[in-house]
Image 1 (tube, rainbow, N blue to C red):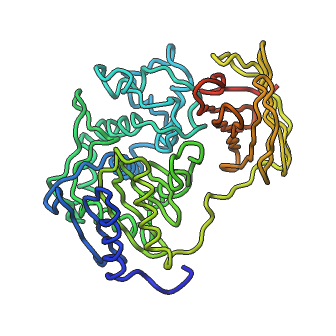
Image 2: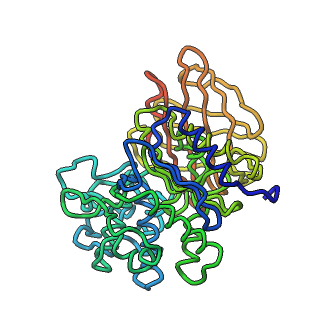
Length: 443
């Protein structure tokens, strides 16, 4: 901490006033420091007595349950999930990308799926869909938000313990916190708990859970405490995925990184915000689903209210990767029709070349300033300033300049003998080949 001050009750009540005056539909705002409640506020149509849908905060509760499965010796994080669902998994017909996917990779949102599987056909069993939908890429390589992973982890808890996620957690910790008996998790049409989004709970329930987590991180010992420390730490980069600054800070085990801390985060701006240097937990419920950028507005208001107490941090996590690389990869067949990838770089600059039977595209980049060049094949001017998203993941945000203003985003994850490439283009008419996944092996 860069000073000895901590926020007072008056500071937090002023922050609540600023949140109310923002015009955003805030439903509740609670804050505590070191176990002492600083403020508890509710706004119509919600009161203290109303259960609130917490959406993806449910994922964080599933993660806590997985930590206890680990402590109980029921799983290992390196276990392939298919081993627990043999009824959906046939090694003779399933892709190795699916068969090798681990529980840990699911926790980190590094599954073999590019999106939530049960949304493809909600009339089919939601858990089963996780194993039946064909994979798009190798697991353990790229963060992509996949709610069906948490849904399947909730089913895993039920299968191994005979209890739902909350009932299992009540037995392990929630009852000791006086977590409400009214809280529950909505079930899908097939009777499985919606482990990715179904939590109904009181705001105070979240604050109590947040304090339990903070105390466990500070003082806990044993398997669960060690698991929780990993769960709230940076595990995988999200800079390519996040729509807001705080969503680009990284991800742990179903828990987001934010500047100066970490968060349980649900759609519509449901938050449990943790600031370890202040020993502070903040809970916010709201409904910003129809407000563009509403989540970041709330986070910015909170951060502005706490900025005099928080240490300065960089805008994004800082990593370094290989200082020199010159590699060529043979690509598996894909709809993009690229057959070969060449990547060359040093500590200052580099180039990525994608080749196919029809065209070759080269992206020149710099690590210090945007490198401007012409994207051959389109004759469009581009600018690329690269960065290492972690020690093995290179991110190329490509700005397209001219008549076709837009962007191309390329994430390259390196392994000892291969590469996984994720691409997304944001432009209305061109650059269709720069989307989806590529998988390659060193020549």
